[in-house]
Amino acid sequence: MLDHGSLLSSLSGPADLKRLRPAELERLSGEIREKIVSTMAHNGGHLASNLGVVELSIALHRVFESPNDRIVWDVGHQCYAHKLLTGRQHLFDGIRKAGGIAGFPKREESPHDAFNTGHASTSISAALGMLVAKDLEGSDGRAVAVIGDGALTGGLAYEALSHCGHLKLPLIVILNDNTMSISPNVGGLSKYLSRLSMKAKYQSFRRSFDSMAKKLPFIGDFFFECVLRLKRAVKAVFYFDNFFVDLGFEYVGPIDGHNIRLLSRVLADVRQLGRPVVVHVLTRKGKGYCFAEDDPGSYHGVGAFSVDSGLAGKSRDTGAGKKAPTFTEALGTALLEAADADGRIVAITAAMEKGTGLSAFRNRYPKRFFDVGIAEGHAVTFAAGLASQGRKPVVAIYSTFIQRTVDQLIHDVALQNLPVVFVLDRSGFVEGDGETHQGLFDIALFGSIPRMTVLAPSGEAELRLMLRYALELPGPAMIRYPKSVCPPELPEMALPLEPGRGVWLRKNPESRLCLAFSGSSFAEANRAAELLGGEVDLYNIRFHKPVERERLVGLMNSYDAVVFVEEGIRPGSFGEYARSLAHEMKCRAGILALAADESYADSGNALGTSPQLLARAGLDGEGIARQVREWLAQ
Image (cartoon, rainbow, N blue to C red; front, top):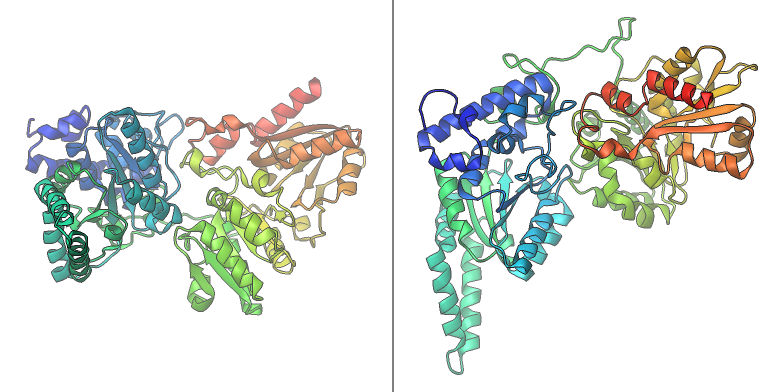
């Protein structure tokens, strides 16, 4: 390989890495980091996590034979170096953009993307399934799960580890640890012992010795048990963590995750083992970019920024010189005010303190704030326990991640009618992150749960009203809102809530057409009403559940046509419910339900900015108006 020119651009695939010399691998690491930083500065995306796994990605692809060896990236937001190393350099400038490659692994995109990921703690289960399939087929190849210490807090990861230890198949788990601090002495001794224990010769000797010990006359079983206990005692003294050993894994590490030569040697040895193994790798988030190294939390997921000066704040001006809050910020402020007035309120999140706007709450009420890690199911049942003892828990989780808690919401909260408030950030369309992060399923998933109240605010005033209302309910409630800036307020948005009823934002006695919208669809529905011209009434649904049936039936009997608009999946939507009710009650109005089509799941359809996603779904103002005209014409 030539020493001049770009090494990254000269790679056609992972096989080319095997021909590079150590100095060239270091240079390649720098080129990859430079490419990731410059691209994220323009496109936005996950920065710190990707900068932390560059050397690990190179070592994995030098040692393993992808795609025959299956590499599964947990969560997947750290797969950028992997994509650059697997023949997608020429596509990388379009990552996370409409028509571009995804910011997460996608099987449809490349055979090197072994498994579609976007949520945490799935990699070990998926990789183990792949390994079992290979075993049943009698085919060769390894399965590798790359999981971060944060994702390892998820219960699914432990279930998979336990099962793998039982099966004793040679699954390789790479524990990417970017937070733990390890004593140099203990770490050095652990590295020495683990390097010894993973060698194939040692494994062969150990199996022979164990077999021989068991065969000793009269005392074989007793002697073997004594040796086993002695080994465990030694490991308990010298190993940093022998939890994995107790589950049936070999433990290797901790090792420097930025030393390509060491990583390559260790992984090459591990690949030859015939047993499950955990390789404990220490990395630094944001490595190679000073701003991200100093503040990896802020540089986890970023918008466009300046490479030279780092993140720059974006001004959101309402036109009156006052910065408009995002829905996330509005929730954080409203919750803090509520907590000031009521000491029973506690806040819970699942590793998303900043993302859900709870940092100020944690700072003021640290004993009433709980971050449970990436364990959404636990967060829900933990909240249920708090509620059963008179507390008022508010659980802040992204809409896409609340999907993981359906059983806990039904079994532990709703069936006991416990007063837990769920605030779902990132509901509706979410730009950049693809189909795994779209918040389109909450209405359909949770609207059918008994005793659950589901609310959708259209602005800051309604969000405050709805939080206050939900906190006073005797049972569970859910408030869904988008990842966006709160729109300019209308006076009607501040009207008090009436259970099961919405409010009129525009109403004319002569109107024959009504646009009924939900929460985040306010701005686009309002724009559509302007484009349609004439007398078009505008109704804010507010409540997805409960619904005052008589009032809704009365509304649908007052018009020739009623159009329901919402940022959710169409099957199970409020519009579908209204259409079914109109048919049942033989209402006068024709009903059109506008919501997200299921085809949004195609990678191209789920990538792009929020305006692009809305336009593609026909849910921007122009799209709504066009569909209404076509429907009326028919």
